[in-house]
Image (cartoon, rainbow, N blue to C red; front, side, top):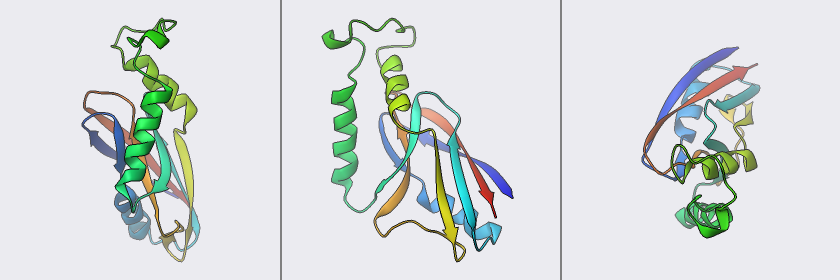
Length: 140
């Protein structure tokens, strides 16, 4: 079993790929068969596996979630009470609740068993820059 925490700097809402870092961790560990669990230590961002070939996919996902959960100063969101940290805060918590803060990826033949077009992403839901911590846990 191996574990590492990595940090990802974000510059606002969007998807930040970190497949290369996760794959490097697995490679360095020398584990042939196992399971990589990834966990983000925050409540206003999430993790997902998504296509990494066409950037339009990332743009469309980001646009969809912005439409699904607009900022709290949008007239449709008047019901929101938690606004202390700005109009993007409670919507960020909602988006994180709709997605995952933990994902697992099988390891086979010493590599992540991702599909051809799959990448691992941090999904930032806040407008301002953040430094996000992700725990990588590899069990064999």
